[in-house]
Length: 242
Image (cartoon, rainbow, N blue to C red):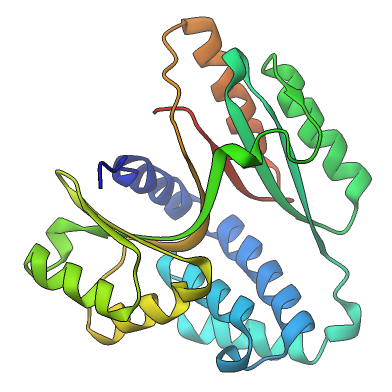
């Protein structure tokens, strides 16, 4: 695969998360609560919960914190009032942006997301206006420095577990899966003792856009920073070639 390495960006995000673990743990805690409400507390029978647990582990959330979150959510199901909502729009120079949020107040979240786009000289569009430019995939990133396996052995382990694609970059490996196969592949890698820098179901752009205009770059970064700082925002996907 030709591949577009997200290694440096993921490492940068993890460093930022390390400085603000409270926020990422709160975000994941909400996701656990909603997943338990929708499918129960057993991850073996709740794909969404299993996926959130994988995300929690990739962000170094302690197992006891995960278990407490599941137990709390299981005993508090009637009071979970968060709901998922997705926004799509355009940043400077037509950069495609998708925002996933989990909120207890859609009016507040919509206003904040719209403001983030506007301040970066972009605009929120209609549902579906940019999502067709992305593919929903399970994505696992492995730091070469942390992995003892030879590339061919790692590739075969991933493909045997059901992965669709395997790519090697200068400093990382990327494994792509169908969303429905993600947890099976991730679990197989975990059982094999393979450390994962990132493991999540994500939206991967079909093509990337390079920005060279300084003003456009500043405006896009302003939008992304505002979205990242919003407590309701769970994830932001875009096709900017960073």
